[in-house]
Amino acid sequence: MLAQVMPGERIVDDNALSDAEALLVEIAIVADPSPERVARYPHLKWIHSVWAGVERLVPLAAARQLPLVRLVDPMLAQTMAEAVLAWTLYIHRDMPAYAAQQRERIWRPHTYVAAGEITVGILGLGELGRAAAARLVDAGYRVTGWSHSAKAINGVETFTGVAGLHMVLARANIVVVLLPLTSDTHHLLNVERIAAMREGASVINFARGGVVDTDALLQALDDEKVSHAVLDVFDEEPLPTNSVLWNHQKVTVLPHISAPTNRDSAAKIVASNVARFRASGELPTLVGFERGY
Ligand code: NAP
Image (cartoon, rainbow, N blue to C red):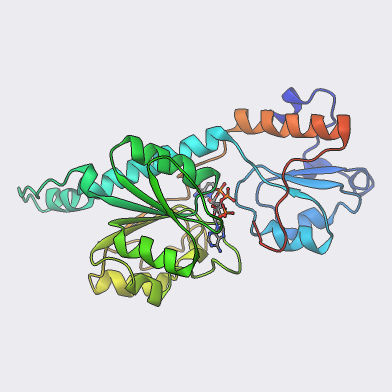
C-alpha cells in the first residue's frame, strides 16, 4: 500500500534489508516496533508512526532526538467515535445484563433510561476524544470532557486540571478513557480517582491499559462501586489467558480492536507527509518528548 501511494520512494520491508542497506534508510514508517528494530538505522531523519499512540516510541526517539510523527487520520477518529458510541449504547441499553439473563433463561425487563439522562465523561479531548464527543452529542447523550488545555466543543462541557477531572468523574454514568499513556497519565484512574466516580458508573478504556490501575478497577467492580468495564487495552497484550479479567462477570474484554489503522487512508496520509518533507523539508506536528504525546 505504501509503495503504491509513494511511487517515487523506495519502500523496503525492514526484514528484507541487509545491514549495508540499513545505513541508507532515511525515514522509518512503523507501527509498534521493538526499540532494537529502530536502532538498526543510524541515519534516520525521522520516524512516522502509523499508530496514534506512540508511548513505546517516545523514549527511543527522544534519546536520539529523532523527530517523531504519529498518525492523525480523520478515518481513525471516526472509527474510534463509532466504537465509543457502540460500547456506550452497549452499557446504556444494559446489554451485559440481558446477555447474562439470556444464558439463565431469565425474562426480566430493566427500566429504560433515555440517552439524555446519561452523562458520558470523556478523558482526553484530542483527535479521537473530540470525534467521540461529537458522535455522543449527536446520539443525545450529555457529554463532558477533560483535557490538559482548555477546549470549546459544541454541546460538550469541558474541564481541565485536577478539580476538573474530579467534576467529570463525579458526574459521569460512563467514563470513556481516550488519554495517551504518559508519565502523567499512568494509573490516572487509581483508587482515589475511582472513589471520586459516581456510584455504579461504568468505564470504557479504549486508550492504553496503563492509564487504568487494573487492581483498583477490579476492587471497585467487586465492591459494586463500578458496574461494568469495557476494556480494549491491557498492561500486557494479548491479555494473558490466566488473567482474571477474562471470566469477570462485569468485564467485557476486547482484543484491541476499537480503532484499527485503516491501511488505505493511513498510507495516503504518510505519503502526503513524506512528499511535503521531500519538497520543503517541513514535517507535520511532532510528538512532544517532554509531554510524551
Ligand atoms: P491526542 O490527539 O494526542 O489527544 C490526547 C488528549 O489527551 C488531548 O486532549 C490531551 O490534552 C489529553 N491529555 C494528555 N495528557 C493529559 C493529562 N496529563 N491531563 C489531561 N489531559 C491530557 O491523541 P488521540 O489521537 O486522541 O489518541 C488518544 C489515545 O488513544 C492514543 O494515545 C492511543 O493510546 C489511543 N488509541 C487507541 C486505539 C485502540 O484501538 N484502542 C486506537 C488509536 C489510539 P490537550 O488537548 O490539552 O493536549
